[in-house]
Image 1 (cartoon, helix red, strand yellow):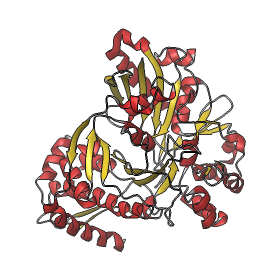
Image 2 (image 1 turned 180 degrees about the horizontal axis):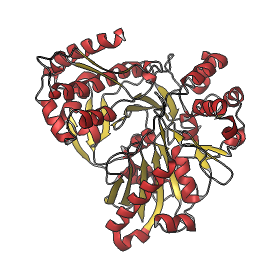
Image 3 (image 1 turned 135 degrees about the horizontal axis):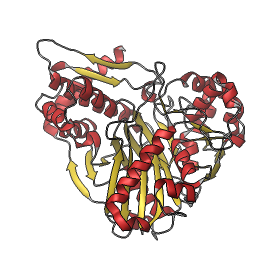
Image 4 (image 1 turned 90 degrees about the vertical axis):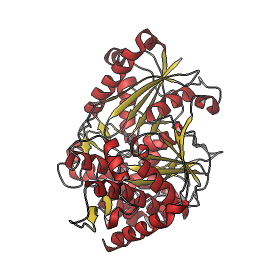
Length: 492
């Protein structure tokens, strides 16, 4: 059996097809070749058209099918990974009512803060394990207040991956993990939070049917099969947000295991079996993909919004669209600490780690007589790493103290400068693997449809492709640069 994985990001969509038995990737493609458009009509807003997602999914599948030839008929299950915390709303005919308010949109911060105050800190942290913050539920509250006529026409609310699955199967379904990422889930009562729904004035009828992440969540309809060139009746058997899915792709399922990614945003995601929380809600806890009542598995997520998007901005505006490898090479020629240049990479919306503040990106310590583009390239990578270190210290308060980080060999983790700085400043080994979100989603599909007899079988083809260990001779230099960076952050 062949397994198809779809990974819906905010920059692009990637599809991969793996051979279920060997785990090897037979075809892979991503679209668009530049980046998907994010519309920001006002400062702090970020929206995308779900139809754009479908267009690029179709193109990615078509590319994979071209690589597969006649083998495409052997695709037997589909898994979906998607950008977390977004809001898609549809009417009775499953038509999208407005552009999706995506994860980095900051407009709903006030609504989350009001819910946190009204419901009470003790309730929110002990039951929701998070402040409602800027997550999906609060985004829906914004729609209710600011677009009441449209709100009245909503049949179901969805996360981005739920909508993709709806278009494939015709079934309006979400997952327990997905509800927790939208801050709809009561961890103490193991149910949807009636208290949150009542405060915001939401009917439970807006919530789609809820199913486990690993399950048959619908089958490809005849219409979708024709549109997407897929076999009719293929089950969608796995669905997860991009960060829980990244953890799955790296075989991170158990307490103490940690996964990282550095795409548009940068994330450290650790698994625990304890219902702990940060009192300031700067890191967030969700249901992991393999969570059950009898065997709890929770994911603690640290997110820095401005990661790959910062590197992309530099590439377009200061590097004349040069290759990232060129930028990495230039950064590698500069001393640790970038000769006093520091970058605060917070230019992609409100940062949860900073108490939902949107402080913007900052370039600090700039000296016209010393600094070059190469200094800026290095300072940006170091600034992202220092942000992760800042969040790492917060995560330790929840009981997660990793010595090893697993990551896919992709995006900013391909940079020697980035990996060395991250390893040295956190004191962890970094192991890179031959996987990504779409391959992980394909493996998840195999688990969800029952093709694999055990979870372990799904990772036969997972291989380590590189290791970075802390360089003790450079640790002091990184610590000194971090101290300077931290002083700048405290001044903001």
